[in-house]
Length: 113
Length: 118
Image (cartoon, rainbow over the protein chains, first blue to last red):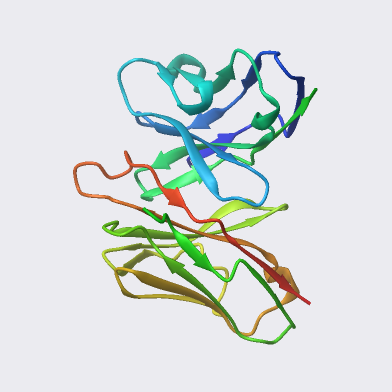
């Protein structure tokens, strides 16, 4: 069955430090992959998506993600974190068989000044 | 564009009462999704409509939950009777989906309705 694993429930980084959030997926075919961000009290906002082609995708707010088929991973990165990046981040895979998004459990990011 | 609109933003009710959550998708979108978010279970898809027709309701927890989409601009999620374990944040999302791009589209989320059942 399709699934998404985000191994880190909580991550704390200092402002200005680099960030990598991990995401592993289980899906038989070529996956459609997404990263969403949820700020406190808000809905989810799409950061970036991967469908095909270049395995390094750029998103909004300075985020990027790299698709690695051999590792079944789609990790999210940012070279320098800002305090406003504190939020919860969700990785998701589109399950064509079920025609819906499968979300990971989320990673809550805290940013120290 | 106003984005996906949900009402109410917060709802507090007592066990056994009927609760109705409302959603207005983005104009022109033909797919609508209802999700539930809890600490224990994360984000779960409850039901998915395409062109106002329910396509997949396998995520609806039980018969107490029902959803309708009478037209392209409005959907409701109803819980009757409500129970404390229904307390969660309920999100509505919409997207523009067609046969050629199914899945390769962004779902736009509303701000959610925080439901508390006492």
